[in-house]
Length: 353
Image (cartoon, rainbow, N blue to C red; front, side, top):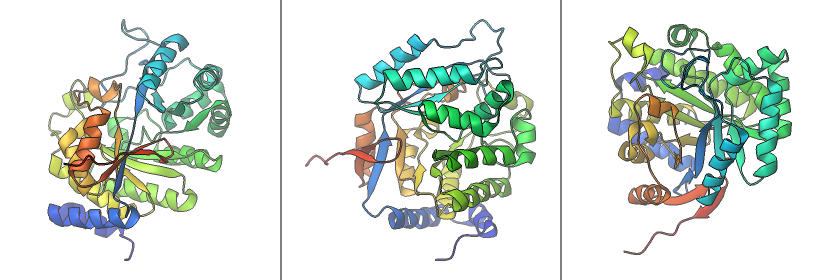
């Protein structure tokens, strides 16, 4: 089957019947994952600080350094959160914060080393391209050196946060202080070059057009062709509550489940070189998250022991391991717990009726 072109992808988003898109995406998923295994991970988001100078209009989580509820977690507070994760069988921390204007590379090195030394069974999946970019600037070193030093101290992989829509026209409106498309791609490429895998993400539902969405997909597909460094793609919708963007642009409407599933299916079809597509039940709710498994997703994401960023913008869905297994089995898939690397840790046998 010929690779989907940019023009074809835009046309599918605009015109294809949803049920047809679902069938096509499920067929592509079965081609890549014929064993019918759907994975999930037990992890915890740890937001080490909520202080951020980037001032993204779509974010309700960040605080200014002078705000009363601004914080930086101590190493001991972080350790307690990790111990709670280990107690329920967790294997990964998704480690992100605001872009703090004063924390330099040495603070991050000490933190990553401290976690790696004290919790050797926990994988650190942390820091976004924008964090790496700013650490480099304030520390007066290159972004590649930041990545190399953090990797050497125990940073295992980097999430795709900060991508939003990889179109500078869109970024200039929703996050004008954030790094541009070329820099986001460059930092992920640098991570891949030093042997660090990353993920790619997309936040849709602000001011972008269908063409901008496919531009984003095209950027990451081309980089994946070059490096093979992306493990997965995760798509979610803008959560508007408490954000500056919805106050400035009240015409922005909440994205429908139809829209989410449509974009997910086209992503699965277009990103033929991405092994994994993750369902975003955190923003869509557990049942649309489950339906995503029939629209191309092969991973249900995280049990999300703790999540603060999208919760600050109004999305407060939750799910435990038992519920995840039930949702996966309910659509005829086999549930399996994985690690950051998408290695299977445990396959769950379906209980006989």
